[in-house]
Length: 440
Image 1 (cartoon, rainbow, N blue to C red):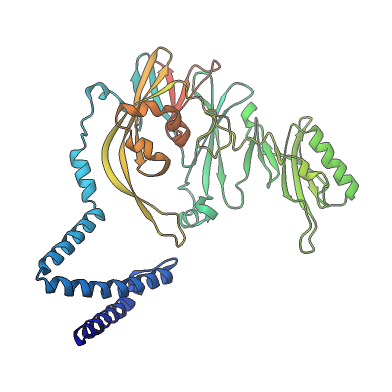
Image 2 (image 1 turned 45 degrees about the vertical axis):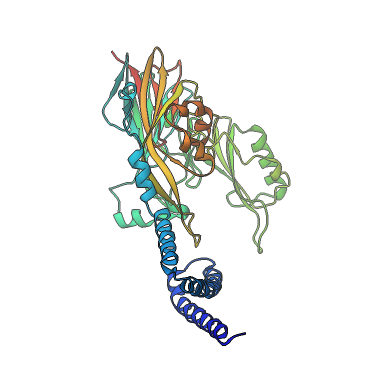
């Protein structure tokens, strides 16, 4: 090997070492999070090899007196990288996107308003708003029961704001239950103030039951908010094993409603501890069990507990309980693209966040109400990746072809009508409820 080549190899090696050392000092400051050490190691190897190769590329272009070609190519590469990793592509897309809404869709209204919306012979009014998803069901007396919640302002602010359960659940809430007659008028209401120590009022159809505080209310049927005591069985745990097993079997076989709480196994020297809350022959009971129930695993944990089923629409999302919603009266008409933007997705922990180009716009829909048609719009984001890509690429009226998929993926709207009521229910948001009534 000639002296010149040996010198080039030595210089290339020296350059690689210097740049790798500099990288090793700077990288730990810039690269953090999960697998950071692996990323730094791989990056260091890349810097060493890349700088070594670049040195000889530089020598070659210098020897043929074409260095400006090299640096021109580098400049183009850097420019391209900046464009790809900046919002310039979004700017270009938004510049050439036609945001002009066709005239035939200009009369579609946003339902996000407190003002009444009139269409044909009907009026729609936002009647209820809530912090948590609104619950509603039809009582045995034919009244619509609606349950909403708010963050209370009449209690200690710091206590309310800081007392959150796992997953961010707001423990302190005021739950108001309304009773509506067949014309949609509120004929009664009562409020339950939930705290960490008392947050277990649940529904068993017409009964409101607090399993921890051991009371129930008959307000749904008779308007009585008085707490009525649940009959307690074996609270002193003096029953024999055989008596407890027999009582459980009787409760299971005769109860109209029941709920099982606790664990059916002994653990760390502790006995099995279970509570069976059930309703039979017009009375509520709470049975205390401290023995293993051999047939417990064959039983359903709940019978008739409707707290999570209280939704006349069916369900608000795929993971909710309830029947499949009836979307037969809806027709998606047009998707109006307004703005393309990058949406950041974060799954928490040490996992890195990601960005996804998404179209923000208005989904225009129609709802058939008797002989009238409600023309409304709802704000929507459609991402470029995954299953949402088909909506991202759908332009204008093409969204109508995706009605089935759209409703299955997004649950965008709900409608409920019954011969029992002289009103109808509508929503595009689980925390809001609209009443549609005839114009008098």
